[in-house]
Image (cartoon, rainbow, N blue to C red; front, side, top):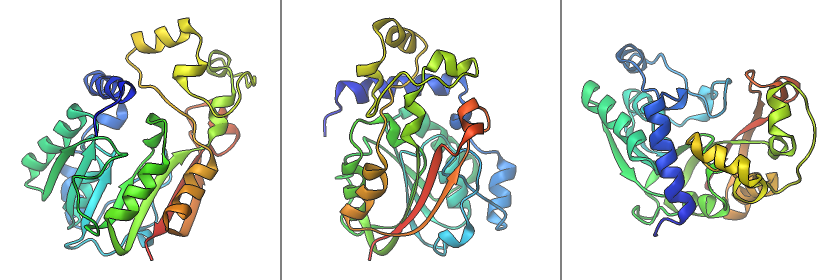
Length: 258
């Protein structure tokens, strides 16, 4: 699959976020890896709530795909907990963080560069677990992600996914930063279509990735349409934002390939 112009832009944007030290690009420490080897670990799909441990299959020897999950965070922890981990991401700089941690701590982890919508590099029925934190907001179409995830999972395999509530995109972003909730947009939303030229230029000048809203029909219904059975769901907040303090703005799901 050739990268479209949006994916090419977001690849550069996320490489830039690594250089700027975005919190979601900061690799885990040796101490965290050592703790995970002792069984002391937790991960988040959304901003704050740890994924329940009962959502994971036994990790020893498990084939895990960290999908659009580069940065040296989730992959190394799952590898330290005993899994065979493949980290798949669109950003070379994010993957480099995973490689550095894997080499530093001798982890069973490999990295693959690519677009989350196209997992053709992997055979059918290859993985036991897919860990997919909030990231499909950076692509315009999410349904192909669920179809590909279903294909590469084995029967009984588990998909853990995080995503945001599209209500996030209804509000005037400048006023939101000032603590005001003023509805000025409609859904579906896309930076490339709905920002003014000046605001889009500002986003690009700041090196921020493009985002798209996705309906809950696409996020949850899309998983069901792909063939998954939903077995768990919880909501989460983003305590750093005014809206996040008002209502839950993130969702995590657990789904199984029957």
